[in-house]
Image 1 (cartoon, rainbow, N blue to C red):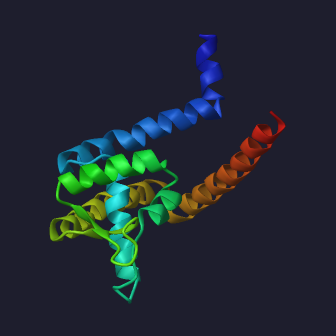
Image 2 (cartoon, one colour):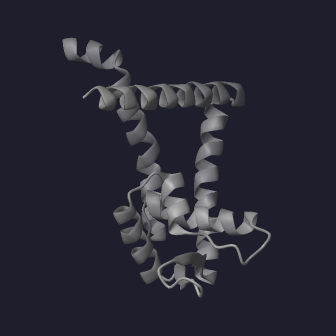
Length: 161
């Protein structure tokens, strides 16, 4: 069929197929842990940020995380509520400013973060094993350039409209 040839040459279709292949397994593993992809990233981010900060008094704000993960404030709030209900993290009100709060993982959340990071690391190691480190590094570099270029082009199109 003519569509088959078109789809084989379409980067958009290929990106979609790759997304489906990669996330099929990850979604299943994350579902077993009771979280979705974004929730897993939030837990991992809070874990890594806490570990990075030597001064434990420094707060981890939701704003910092939603900017890093490029998620809406509403989406962030919904997912934080879900993670709080599951007992993985807690919101701690700022003593000096009652309008703001920081995020902390519970003990259960810390254990969960380690398990979730292991899921991602195993998947990434499997990809590296199949592709080889050199090819994987090249692919990541190409995808980063594409993302930057596409993001800039998207901004230009929005400005012109």
